[in-house]
Structure formats: structure tokens, C-alpha cells
Image 1 (cartoon, rainbow, N blue to C red):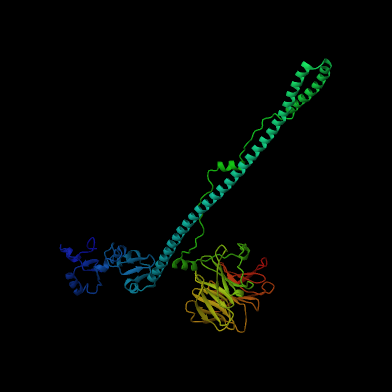
Image 2 (image 1 turned 45 degrees about the vertical axis):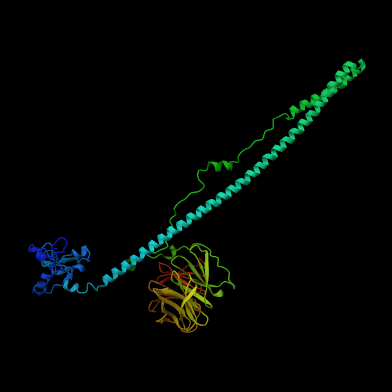
Length: 528
């Protein structure tokens, strides 16, 4: 730049005059004032230079504005671009470093630079990243809200637990107080009976003492002789009684003893009643970019074979009872992990959360067959009862958003990049715009009335189960047949079909088969 800020006229500065620049000339790489601009437009060497106002120029990022049109090494204007080294080249640069390179004329390649799809891609990528950030921020906000609710729930649980413990301890205290009182009364009664018994013997001894004294004073010698024998016998009985008290342990001290239960000691030794920890769980949001999507298409994957696949029972889901016997004919998984079941017998959709717990049910038109996810809140449902149409339903407010009319009953349906792909009796595999339902076209024509046919898509392939012939057929997205699998010893009464990330095809039938890419590998270990 001619000045530090580019805000002053470079021509005037060269003459030691300071004038504010009105426009910026990228060719001259300097600002030009209003007076000099007239000469700039009239001069043969500069009249074709495109200039921009200083207000617009100042909005250009500094890193972009600093891109010079002249080579700093040779002070020559750039004329070519080297695609091999991704560098701008002036004539001397070409002769010294880029003689054998594939050079492009700058004037030719920059003509369409502003209209280039690259900027559209970059802008789209930035929009996608912006949406990702908004989703992440919203997800974190929801996480904070969830943490708040968890804290409140924990406080309530702790308070409730404390009350239960207090009530239980009060009950235990009341019980032990009653036990102490009962034990005390028992000991008191026992001691009182013993004292009464001993006191009775004391009276007997008093009587003997009195009788012996009277005999000694007033009885005859004969009476005294024979009376002594009698007194001796009575005294011996009392002595035996006294000895029995010692031998029987009747003179032991009786004491009440209180001993704390070991479990209570454990409670008193506890330093905390619970632990709080932070447990990370898998994210419920997906963060993707356009570049990442393109890269995923370019990077080859090593698919898993049937020998590497193991089926594991994750959970058993109990469907809420309806007025009629439950008849599940289709299901779909939402981005959040919710599972939506189509219950044909009860004309409803049954929604469960990602843990398999019942959330709600949504009534639909008569005889729903299959269901597919459009977005987190919306699904498409096929029917095989008149009037024939595909029903677009908001599962949050449980209202029908719109209907896509069809000529006959429909069975399997899936959503492929904003277009519904479904099987219609008498027509075959059809496709329609998910938003408007317009532009209905036939991808694969299937004549005749064939029922209970399902469809799935993956990696530009369509997979079609044909119940009548017990077969599975793979097509391209344009309807060209790739392969067909038919073996009634393996497939019998086929219905639903799904495809995993490794292009293994899973078919619901009396037996299950898994097909990998263009050849079939059978698994009879699992009955579905």
C-alpha cells in the first residue's frame, strides 16, 4: 500500500501532499483522491483499471486486501497461475521456477472467480458449521437444564431418603424403648418374687428362733429333748434352702444390657451416604460438514463380512395394549433414538424413547402399514385401505401435516435424501417429493397385485423384498436390476428389509438372510 492505512492518495503522497483517498486501485496498489481519479480514468495506462470506493475497500478482510498484483521479488505484475505449486507467477518467476509447470492465464481464470461454485460450497459449509454450532450450543443448554433438573431431583431424593431413615430410626427407637421397659418389668417381677420367697423363709426362721427360746425357758426336759430334734430338722431344711440359693444362682446380680446392632455401627462409621459422579453419554446430536460428506464418499470402507456379525439382544420392548390385538407391521428410528412402531390392528403409531420406554401414541388413518422418518418430529406412513394415500404426521402434536395421494394401497416406505421411496400395489416402487408429494415417478415397475412388499435404500442401491416369490432384489437408484436372491429354504414369507453401514442386508422372514454387496451369504442361526 502507498500508506500505512491506505486512506491517503498515493499520487499526492509522492508529491509530499496529503489528500484523503476516495477510491482504491488494485492495479496501482494505492489509494487515489478525487482530483487524481480524473487523471487516472483519463490516462491511457490506467483508464481500464477497475477501482473501488474506499468504504467498500475497507470492508475487504486485511488478509485478502494484502494480496498484491505485483511480484515482491521481481516487481512485475502477476500474469499466470501455477496449479502445481498453487502460486501466482510473473514472467521472471516462470523462467526461473515454473518452466515445466502447467500454467494458467490469470485473466482467464479470474473471470468466473466470484461466480465460482467454490464460494457456494464454502458458504454452504459455513452455514452447515453455523448450524452445527447452534445445535451444539442448544444441546449444551439442554444439558445444563437437564443437570439442573437432576440436581433438583437428587435433592428431593436425598430429602425423601432422610425422612424415610428418620421415620425408620424413630420406629426402631420406639421398639427398643418398649423392649427395655418390658425387660425391666420382667426383672423387677422376678426379683420381687424372689424377695417375697426369701422373706417368707425369714419369717419361718423368726418363728423358729421364738419357739426355741420359749422351749428353753418354759418346756420340761422331756419336751426340750424331743423338741430339739424337731427344731434341728426344721433348721436343716432352712439351711438346705439357703444352700440351694447359692447353687441355683439365685443370688446372681441381674443387669440390663444394651448392645448396638453391628449394622448401626456401620451406619455411624459411614462418611458419606452416596457418591456424585459425572457420567458422559453418547451425544444425541450429529455434527457434519459438506466436505466431510464428500470425503466419506471418496474414502473406501472395508466392509464387515457375515462371519464378523454377531446379533445381540439389546432390549425387549413391551407395546402398550390397544383395543384390538397388536399388529406391528413397520417401524423407524428417529435421529434422537426414538422408535416409532406402526400398529396396523389399532390404527396408531406407538412411540418409545431410546431406552425402549413408552412415550405416547398417535392415531392415524385406517390400516397403517409402514413408517419412515422424515425429521425428528415428522414421519411418513403408508396405508392399504381406501382412500389411498401416504400420510405425513407430526408425532409431537399428533396431527396430519399433509397427504400424498396414491392410486392403490402402499406397503414398504423409506426416505432417501428428501424423496419418499415406497411400494405401491399394481405400480411397483414409486418415488415422490417428501415436502410436496409432487413429481411421482416409477423407479421399478411391478405388474400385478403383489402385497407385503418392503423397500430400503443404501449407497445408491434399492433393496426390494417380494413376499409372493420369497425373494430380495437389488436395484440401482435408476431402477436397473443388480442382483436377485431367492432360496425358499432360507427365505420364507419375507417382509421388512434393512441395510447396515457395511451394506449387509437384513430381511425379516421365518428365517433371516444377510447379503453383502453383490453376493449372498446366509445365516440360519437366528430365527426372526
